[in-house]
Length: 144
Image (cartoon, rainbow, N blue to C red; front, side, top):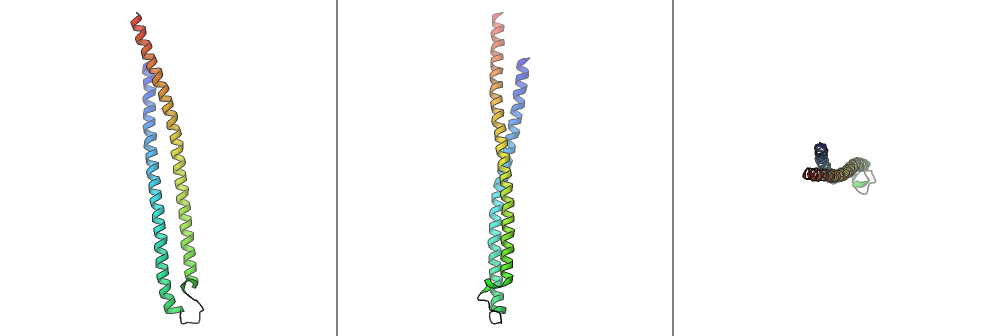
């Protein structure tokens, strides 16, 4: 009977270990996704800057260059500065969110890894107890 209980306990630990490994894999995949999204965000920022430069260069050459405004180039146009500030703020907020998400994922992975180590230690001890009980039962039956 003791062997059956130890074996059942061992199987429950194996089941939990498999669940943890699955969750760790999911969190690691999410971290990869977060890194890809951060890269996409950087590409978005670069594309926005490029589009803004092109648009403001055209506006400057048509509207501001020969007018009464004293702008030296398109970077001095108030709309350009406002749009750059918006892009920068949006990018920083999104990167901050991504960083927080990655940190949360890393914390989850760490927590699960610690639980996995504990489960492996418990499993080793239960395997030893199961083996000892089986040996003792075998030795006891030989002695009869």
